[in-house]
Image 1 (cartoon, rainbow, N blue to C red):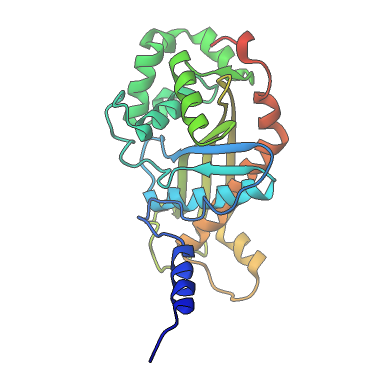
Image 2: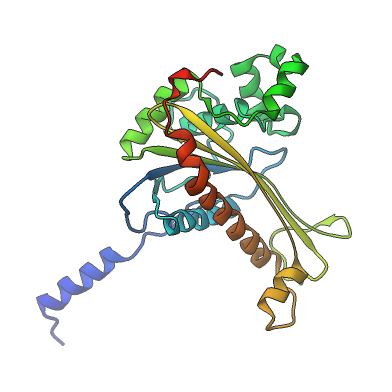
Length: 284
C-alpha cells in the first residue's frame, strides 16, 4: 500500500498539534489559547500550611484556576510545573527560576495581613525570620493593627525586581500566587486519604486558601482569603441523579473548582483595580 506525501504531512501536523503530557505536578490545561486584555502569570500554587498537599492536587487546582480566569476575560500564562514541589524544599537563594518564584510567593505571604507564623511550613517560617526578623513577631500592638488592615502592600525591593524580570519574560502584567493552606475531608473526626473508593456520605470537606496578586511593574500586592466548606450531601443534592456518595477525589474537584472560581471573580472585581495604582507611596 502506498501512502501519499500529502497524507504524511497531514499526519505529522496532527501529531505536532497534540498536547504534550507531563508529570502529575504539571498543569496541562494552562497554556491553551491567548486573550487580549489584562495578562496574569500564575507563578506558583503550593501548600505553605503546616503540612504539604500532594502535587497532583495542586496541579488540578492550577488547571481549574486558569480556566476560571479565562472565563473572566483574563489572559493566563505560566510555567509547565507551577506547583514547584522541588522548589518547595530548595535552599533559599539558589537562583533557579522555580526557587525565585517560591521566594516571591513567600515574600508576599510574610508581608501580608493573613500571615501567621505559628501555622506555616518550616521553609516559610525560615523565610519570615530572615526577611522580617524575629523581633517583628513580638510587637503585639503593631502586629494586631497590621492584621486588621486591608491595605495593599509592597514586595521587598529585591523581590520586586525579580518579579518584574520574570513577568517581562512571559509577557505578563501581573503575577498570581495561591497558598493552598488546608484541604480536609473528615468523617467522625477521622481524616481520609485523597485516593479512596469509599463513598463520601457524611463526610465534610473544607478548603482554606490565600491568594496574592502582584503588579509586576510596581510590586504592589493584593491578598484575599478564600474559604469554602461543603458536605457530600450538599454536592449529591446538587447532582441529584445517582443517589450515591462521590469518592474523595471527585469531592475535592468540586470544592477546588468553587475556590478557583471565587479567586477569578475576586481578581476581576477587586484585585486588578487594587494593584493598578502607583505603588511608590506604599510602605511595608
